Image (tube, rainbow, N blue to C red; front, side, top):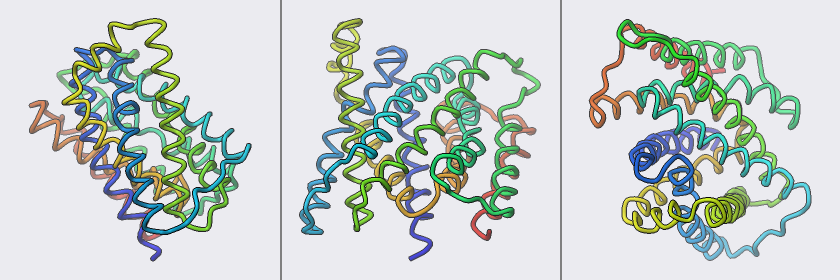
Length: 294
């Protein structure tokens, strides 16, 4: 089923927007690090549940991690922590949809890193699609008539996108290094390992540096639990897509997240989008169409 990765990616993008919105709302109460930790701490139990269901359904043994796989996953897990924190910081300084757009400057870096580290080739048509969609993202994130451009949120958002690119390549590399014949088992086992690393790292940091923040996370368990569920499901879909297709194509199709973010921004946050940003969204859609036909 060559189009299965498309289904996984669209599901991942939609759920990720919802999770980002939840984390953005939690940032004021929990702080950037606390809101970042929510997706890992409360996502891990659901990822373990997904893994249990997959292992029971397939009847396959749990795959063994090797040194190459561990290297990829540790790098990706730490990069994702940093990228999420930067993205949430950008959301505090700019509108939800624009901050999301800054973070989505990622596909070009993913294509370059994927070619350099994984040998994932990019055809001319795919490269054109990536550039058109990324140009659309840049237009969406450009200055509107009512909102002056600020380098700080731009740097935070674009930096987030670059580090998310490292994470995407790392997770795809980890799935491939596992050498498991079943892509669902490989993707789910990799997700669980990544979340374990992230949960241990951030929990340890908060215990040492900011125990009140950790207690605040525990007290906010109800909204955090739902954010964890949505986040774990989004990650599961991303990992399944990475197991089937290059990270560059997955992340470029994932730019439809901007369309979902715009709908959410208008209806939940009551934030208007400038007419210039509509042009950018059209370019994103065009790039996605070209990608799917490349």
